[in-house]
Amino acid sequence: MSQMQPLKKPPGFKDPTIPIPMPPRKVNLPPSFNAQKKKNRSCCCRCFCCCFLIILILLLLLVSACGLFYLWFDPKLPVFHLRSLEFTKFNVSESQDGQRLNAQSALGVELKNPNVELKIVYGDTRVDLKGENDVNMGAGEVVGFVLENRKVKVVKFVMKSNELLYDGSIGKLIMNGFKNKNLRVSADVSTDIGVGYKGWKSWKIRVKVSCGTLRLKQIENGATPKCGITLFNW
Image (cartoon, rainbow, N blue to C red; front, side, top):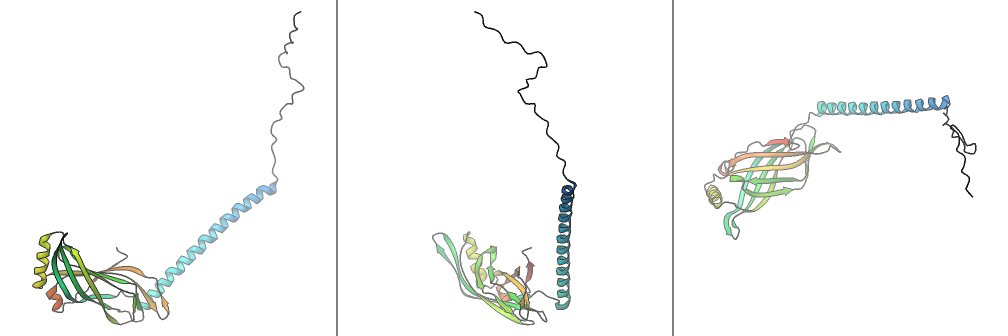
């Protein structure tokens, strides 16, 4: 007995048992929602403008305060002079690595505060002594201190060197220069300085001071050249 074939559905037939999907409904937001959104955007703009104006006013006040401070106090940089240099030990010795410079010295740097009312506040101060061919002849450091207005102070640095000389001829050159006092030396000072007035102190800035090349005989004869100052390592 042959099985009955199911009848084919005519074109366009829709099965009533299958639900017809509905298109998404467009939700109409109430006018109050759009108004609140615009209001929030307006509040953000006002807050940004207020913050910008506050920052601008603070910057203007800061610039004005700095200008008044400069006009009132007329701040000046300190003046540095290389005052003295005395070697207590100076010789070149042979080692397994080569020649070495063994030196001990005391270096005096004169500091002058030219300000009428402001004191100068120094941080820890370091000096490096260099010789011919940039040979390191010692380094010394002192702790921070305060130099009152219109005062002069000579700071003493005690230095030692055990420098390895990269060339044997350098040892002979500096020894001959030391004996006949024609050895050229220079000093570089690194420190931080700020200003103070009564109980108030400013922040400190980085300062490098270069005391130009001089011969030992010039220093012994009393030469005290003025040293150059560089701010912020520029």
